[in-house]
Length: 302
Image 1 (spheres, rainbow, N blue to C red):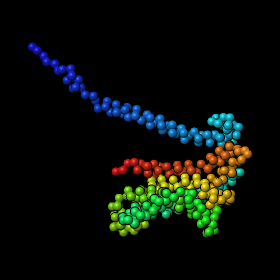
Image 2: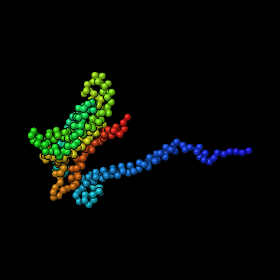
Image 3: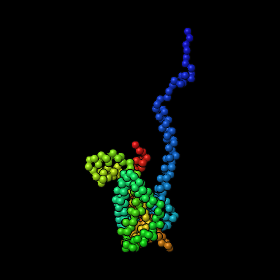
Image 4: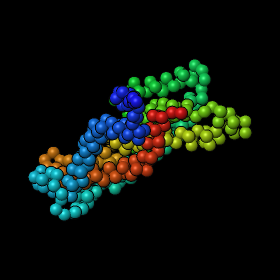
């Protein structure tokens, strides 16, 4: 009586690894591949956090401690530097001017850019393409090239070194980017939604308000954040068009008054800088979720 046995190779082939083992190996391989990305992300976060930490700790130190122990924690949480910066640079008035100019300019920019983007998104023909290219040409004009004509215009209409002219000028610098970005967001809205609303009797403004604005909210938030940062941090045009008058100047114009040619109190300067950063961070915290949604919509499309 003879018995037959399967060859060793065939026995090995017949043994299959469980599906969970394959998934575990894949997950481990993906985890190892993401290690460099995690390292780069933490390095980048440290590069951003170190300057912020330095400004915060310096705002509570005198000059000697800033230079002798730059990264050490302050010995006491005295707000004397903040009070000095607030009074010496008139930061209260400067903050009010910056909030007024930035807020009104951002609202005015959206009021002009949203209808223009809606029209360009639904325009079909050469005229719409020509207008969109005209807005794109705004990126090719440097700000310095428009400085002298803008000053002459402000003098001619009697609004030179006034808040009103700065408020009217800021949206003009932001309209090209705002219109182009919002146009791309509004083009993602299906035309069938507009057709259905039109059949139900909605006019153009109702379609824009009830259909386009809710869908394009992440894009509007992105444009708003970009404009707020640009308007708040603008220095050259606010210095020339607004002037150094304490009743008109913004925080970016007021901060350099804390720097002296003979001696500078860097603790006071750091405290003043920290005060000017607070509104920007608050605005970003309020609108960050919408901006993240806009980035996700741009990365994943159905």
